[in-house]
Image (cartoon, rainbow, N blue to C red; front, top):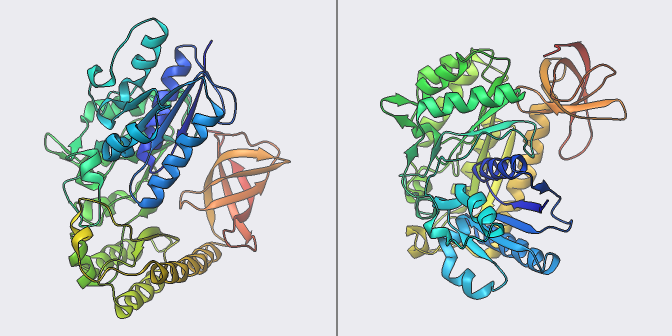
Length: 432
């Protein structure tokens, strides 16, 4: 039996693809081990969305080269698509570099090697959706890939280059994948992709797909991962009344300045973004919106930055993920004048980081006294931990609850720290 280990950097789409690969190796008799344990095969799924992502990916490759000197080292993901030539020169210990288009065939590459077959990754099957349903994963939730690639070409973004044009997975494959993971016992389905709001397969758009998924029989709930504030409408808002669809969206703002949004080549205005928030919150007052914000984009003035701060406070995001603008070679923003200094980017980033802490605590505090259906992920010393439907972390004492089980919990308090868990008391175990 061969030991194999995985390291994943970046987005949920990468996590989904790693989960699917790991499950495939597990089914074929490979032993999955932690990254710090001895392994015969190491697979690193990289990210290249920012300079920091490149740095972390390189660091993971270097760590693997030192820790697993005699292992087969396979590096895949977006950094391979973006920097393959440089990586091949800088990382001689890597056995294979596999791009996103051939990532789903990594098992064939590795297993073939041990059977004496010599195959170059470029000769493997190229299929963005050829991932088997993952029975054993690194997560309690099951991620389902519905789409890949993006046609928006935001001026700061390298993703269209490394993930390609927008492509939607067939409806039948998605529904069948969901049915299979429900049969495996998963209770929460997370829909993922690069730009999932633009899903369209043979006339079925994103909202139609959600409706079909919600009408699929089974004991599960559905969570939508990161989504752009365009490509959907009122039908999606109606669907949030369905008990299976969780009241949370990670809706990417990036900036609250219309002039910066225009320079970023975003497909919406601040008014349009706020209209989405207001429409949803008018119907579902406790709905949790989380977001991404980029600070220090070229030409971002202090007034632009203040507008982003004000808007974030007005909306009341449950979480803000902030990025310092990072120059990506080959993007339009790389050639823009008035680049912001790193010192100023760091200053603005720290302000947003503190704002994120304050807004997160404020949102979670206002949930005290309310109920959440918590999917239990861990139980330790009689204390169950998991996430409620609003994507808030909850801890509660229990004697009868099991992992991967829903529990109805009344929120009674909150921890006192920067990223506080809500505390609760179980009303009843839903026993499903």
